[in-house]
Length: 364
Ligand SMILES: *Cc1c(COP(=O)(O)O)cnc(C)c1O
Image 1 (cartoon, rainbow, N blue to C red):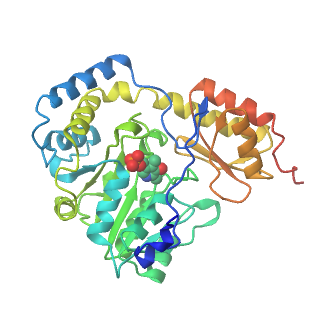
Image 2: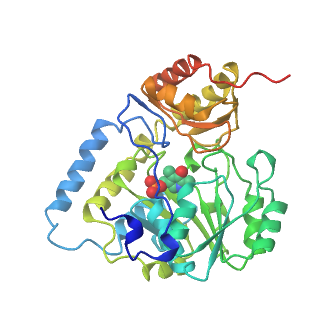
Image 3: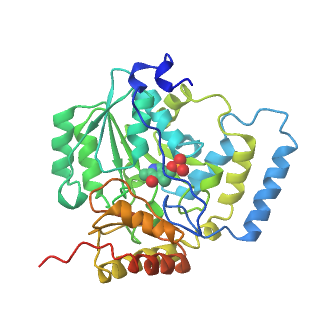
C-alpha cells in the first residue's frame, strides 16, 4: 500500500493533518455550528425555481463576475457597499484561501490568535504562508494594546482576526481592529462568520471599511443564513482588493447553480434569518444552564458556547455521542464546544450532559 509519505508531495505539507471535524449521523448534531433550523418550505421552492431556470442554460459557463449575486450581497450588507466591494466563493473558506493566495504565499506570513478557527492555519499552510501565533489576553480577549504589541513583535504580511472568535465566542472591539490596521502595512482580515449572532447593536467591522483599503471583512451564508450545504461565503473590501482576488480565483469558480441558489435565498433574507433570535436565546440558555451542571461557559457572541470545567473532555464527548449527541472536542484543556441548536436539541444536550457526571469537582 502506498502511503502519503511515499509520494513526492511538497515538503511543507509532510506531517500535516487535514481539517477533520468528525462527521457522524446522529440525532442531535451540535458540533460544527450549523443552523439546525431548516429553511422555510416556500423559500426552498423559490430556490428550486431559481436553480431550475439556471439549469436551462447550464450548457454555458456561468457569469464569471457573479454580478447579480454581488449586488444582492451588497444590498444585504448595507453600509453603502456596492457590488464592486464584494467578493464571493464556495464558502468563506475559499474566500480566505483567495486572500492568502493573493496576499500571502511562500516567503510571507500571517499572524493569528489561537485558539481560533482551525481553517485559518490550515489554509495558511496550504498556500505556503507561514502561520505565526499571537498571544491573547486572559479570557481570550484581545485589547488594542495587545494587538499592536503582537503585530510589532511579529511583523507579518497579514493579520487574521476572528470576531466573534471561533471556538471561544469572544467578541472584539472596533478599537482593536482599528489599532491593528494602524499598526501594520499589511492586510487585516476580519472573519465575521458569526456577525449575525452578536448582541443587537454591536457594530460590525464593515463600519470601518471606508478609507481603509487594506481591511477585509469576511462573512458566510453557512451559519446564520442556514445555507452551509450550498457553500457560499463572501467578503467586503475596497474594490482594489477584489481586483487582486480575480488574479487567483479559478475562472467560473461559482457555479450557475450556486449563484442561482444564493440569489434566491438572499431574496428571502428576513425569513432565512428568522431563527437567529431563537438560536441566540438557546445560546443564552446554555450560558445559564451549564453553570448549574458545574461547568464554566465563556461569554459568547456567536451561536455556540465553549465551556470549561470538564474533567475528561474526550470521555464526556464520547458519553454524549453514546447518547446520540455530537459536540466538539477541540483539544482545549478541560473544555468542549457546543452549538446552540433548536430548543429541543439544546434540551437533549443538557439532559445528556447532566447524566455524564463529567464536571471537575467544584473548587473552593
Ligand atoms: C464556520 C466558519 C466559517 C464558515 O466557513 P464556510 O466555508 O463559509 O462554510 C468561516 N469562519 C469561521 C470562523 C467559522 O467558524
